[in-house]
Image (cartoon, rainbow, N blue to C red; front, top):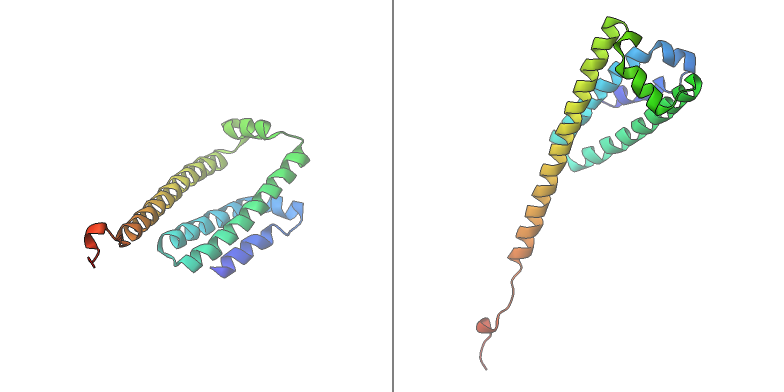
Length: 146
């Protein structure tokens, strides 16, 4: 897992021209890493989840910087890019299919992550509720009479 993360992060340290040439590869590697992230969230220990979250935060930051660089390089606004990405005529049929599949996968991943986080939150709330209800409270009827 560490090798995958390091390899992915090295892509972002390359020159703009090299990154542009490897864009498909970077995207594929990112999707594979997201799969591993999802697995660690479901099956990993708390320590593994904390480490993975830090890695994902760093990866998101790199992706945001790369996105901003691309926008500036092309002279486009985020809205312009969204419009271009919605138009299949801007892509080859293979690229378009790949983008559509990636969007579906990202959407599903986001839904699964939200469900998982919601379940964990509910479990934590139940645990805290049970913990609080187990605290003994002394009632007057339980007092010993002197």
